[in-house]
Image 1 (spheres, rainbow, N blue to C red):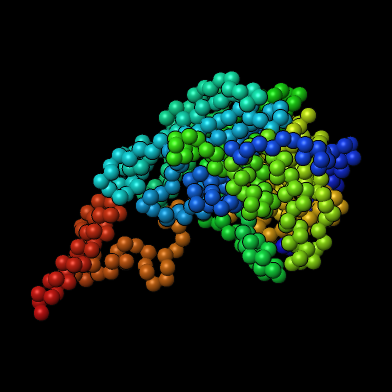
Image 2 (tube, helix red, strand yellow):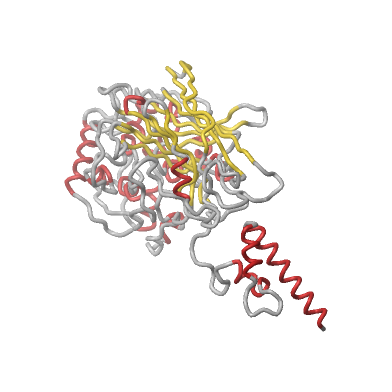
Length: 508
């Protein structure tokens, strides 16, 4: 955690908004507690016991922002499957066929879904007699050498007071961008990515596929808060890992109630079929880090199965958070006075005058004011630094939510000025300038080969690819085996090595 440079005026701006909301009768703890909790019916990187064992259904991060190149639209991104190792074949990363991936929109502040964008997937295998994800070089999404593919549908579900109004199929049998196997298999991955960007009706656009994980953070925070002595900061633990992403860009008028009420609440959920064939919600995510560092162990799985309308049951986790107490115990930084009504505004209502809808029912949602135009020079600390187009007004890919959350948790909004952070201030990959904005996934053939192993199949097989009695490789055999694909290279090379050794044994 190192000092960071910020705009003091921006800091005062958000503090003024919060204090004004509280002074004007902002939500008191008793008011939220009066909400009626219901039966369990938010997820991030391995944040809860049950979902950590179900990565296909684990929602790692959620983003919502007014599109920088199309400010009359909003982009929503939900990511899944944490810590995808790029070379993790032969069974690379797919969305689950038995799941409903939902992005919810609450456009009137009542903590209930008004719109749901529901993604469902189907996996296709061309040749089940090979172990390969691809049997040759892949040049397009319909390439016959792309052996394992996925397609998806999107249903737009409209509701009113939790009652179904309509259900419309807005995308049907759309191809998913595959996992980035490697440079030999997919020499032009960006071409495949572009082919997976799909135009919907009504000036909307969708994407599903693999991407570089846009979340940047030093996750050694869980080792006694950065090692107990700040010795473990500055390393982007997620560098080089991928995720599976869903992204949809829609006109602002498509999702908001009206131009006079432009604030929307966003959260994502995943449902999967249980043993009886019924749908069961296993993952939920709104604001970042809530289920990781706000909810205790006893509430994590319950939160993932719950709905925003019943968030009163988790109120004490917000008003009496554990993290500031831990920081005080380890680093002797005094925790702010409780109850933390400043956190209630940030996590449950939205900030009055910024992204709080009228007559809001407190609930954990990522709230976005769609009338605030994107800035040409986004500041990584968003609203804390005077940039009202950033977190906690929605969440952009570049927002440094770890630093923001640490500073707010330590009382930035109630007069305890601090510059806490993890010294990871940006993603390792640059984001795009147009939809879906995410960086291409890291290739499975990334990085240097370990020292002494060589950097090609020929080097790894040694003189197994050398013809008997020759001082050089048999280029004909190499070319033939290369044409057979990666599996062919290994098998032919091994066969040559065996044949040569057998001939040598005969000579003796």
